Image (spheres, rainbow, N blue to C red):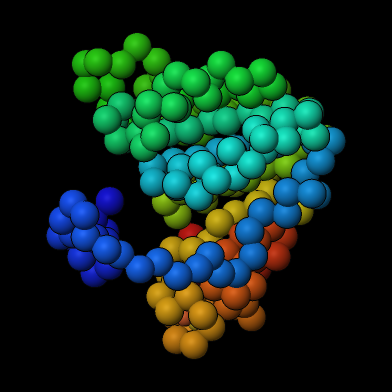
Length: 203
Ligand code: FES
């Protein structure tokens, strides 16, 4: 998605052009802490990009987890990334349950229409034995988190990906500060418990 200076430059790249990539930095999902639990993943828009890595890792170790339950949303069916696998092979994996929704069906969608919170249900997972991962635009993360709290998830069970303000990625520019944390070094994955007291978490 063309969303800023870097991504605009990426859109100007031509086929065959060489691109340097550094990272990953920071701390990711503590997957070993998820062992034996139901992993509930709520994703929106390009938030599916980091979720894809998590999802593939969970699937590789699927027997370690009770289940992997995914609820993903996008603006339109065309806006889903990884469509080829998301609409097909991922949905056939044993132990994986995926539901999708779009804000605007655009005439070629027979699934659910509405924001991602409309496909979240209290009985999607057994809450006391589940962790939930939320990744997407800040507004989607905010309303998903509020709904999950309403369902009875505790702040320590909710994992948020807070990379929205990252810039240098290496703890130098201060752009990513969230309370006492450098998101790029201490995160980008935090539990809601860790960040809930900061006023600007959804900005
Ligand atoms: S992104 Fe620069 S300090 Fe974190």
